[in-house]
Amino acid sequence: MIAECRLAIAESKTNRQSAVGKRHLFMSEAMSVATESAIHTENLSKTYYDFWGRPKVTALKNLNLTINRGEVFGLLGPNGSGKSTTIKLLLGLIFPDRGGSAHVLGHPAGDTEINARIGFLPEESYLYRFLNGEETLKFYGRLFKIPKKELKERVPILLDTVGLDEKARKRKLREYSKGMARRIGLAQALINNPDLILLDEPTTGLDPIGTREMKDLILSLKAQGKTVLLCSHLLADVQDVCDRITILFRGEMMELGHVRDLLQVKDVTQISTRGLNESQVQEVKTFLSRLGATEATVTHPTTTLEDLFVRIVRDNTPGGNGAYTSSK
Ligand SMILES: Nc1ncnc2c1ncn2[C@@H]1O[C@H](COP(=O)(O)OP(=O)(O)OP(=O)(O)O)[C@@H](O)[C@H]1O
Ligand SMILES: [Mg+2]
Image 1 (tube, helix red, strand yellow):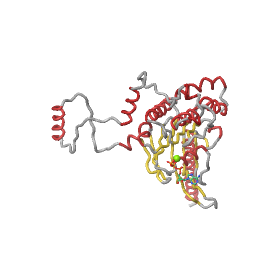
Image 2 (cartoon, helix red, strand yellow):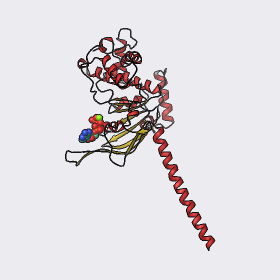
Image 3 (tube, protein in one colour):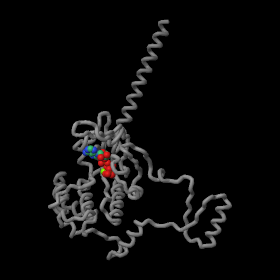
Image 4 (cartoon, protein in one colour):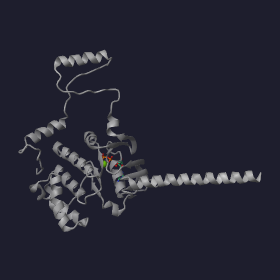
């Protein structure tokens, strides 16, 4: 009897220890996800309060999201769905509701040391209107304590990267068009050579060429191993550059996954080919109907309007090789 009791006590102790062990393992796994990923949120929520301290809007509800390092991630959603709120929480510009947390580059959101490794393009850039493009970048470079020599080299490279030519970079920002303002905002977001770049509606105000350049730039940032979080409601932009997306609606995550998987129409098979004449196309149609294919269409694919626009402008730009910069 005593031996049985001892055995039971020993067993319950072992079970308790293994439960504690499992909890530790679970917690250490959760910790390593938080430290290894670029962004990790757990039950991240944000309620805005009115003047009297009464809850007014719940802008974000229990967001659980992990964004890997080196990924281009799209945060989609209609107006007012909580995209900008999420970015502000990640930067520590606003505080989350109790019970939720966000880690950025392995540290709690808002950590000043970490913020120095983040580039941020806000919805609207509030830059000094009396500085010109070049002075603006030098000003922000000095804030990040970038050595003078390094800054001198980096500023013209960045201005080239965002497509602001010699004339544009000498003009005061108050004279900039919407697209030019977006470009200098982006250059400012990249001045500190950040590891993580948060872009809130980066293509707003850009013409199709600017939009294409922005997308190419995002892809080149990815090729350099950087992580990009992109907020937008312009679906085509997101589709072209993002590895994964999530769709927010009224502050809640509705969908999460790889763009290709989410968009794939699983019950349709598409075959493309070149070099078939009309009678061969007829043969393909007959063959398909023999296989029992229903609603088979054999047609010519169309390009996108964006592709067409970009081709026309590039073909008509002196040099013809796409050397398009914005000084307008
Ligand atoms: N400072 C604030 N005070 C009160 N409510 C706010 C505040 N900022 C945002 N909100 C509200 O929170 C909700 C989410 O706003 P948020 O700006 O995050 O949306 P969004 O997805 O970025 O929208 P948009 O596409 O229009 O930029 C909206 O209902 C908005 O009115
Ligand atoms: Mg917004």
